[in-house]
Length: 143
Image (cartoon, rainbow, N blue to C red):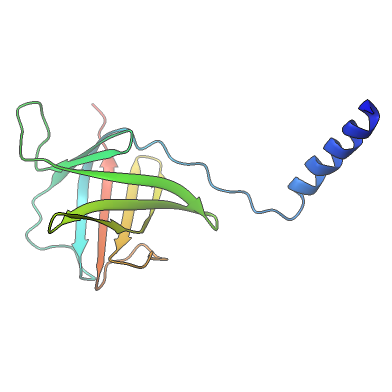
């Protein structure tokens, strides 16, 4: 009985590693990020963008011009990280007209740089601005 279980377990482990795409590791987004670029519904950066910050803790993201304990002007959003077809997904939950709306998106972190791209109803497949999209680029804050 014990030998049969070892053989079955070994074959399951071998089968799992053959031909199965490796899913990406979910990035650690926790901390303070300085926003370097924002694009909303356009292919070019917002011309009036004067900078801002993102503070991410667990599944919450605060966005504001300069985040501190005294700043009460931050907008708070919820999000969900996940994986789909080798891509890290970032689904943003926003409130519009009193209802929660899910904006499906993608996220990647390379070194200290993060990109988030969310669509109105369809998950983007590239990190680019455009109609119905929000693109945020940020750099991790280091003292």
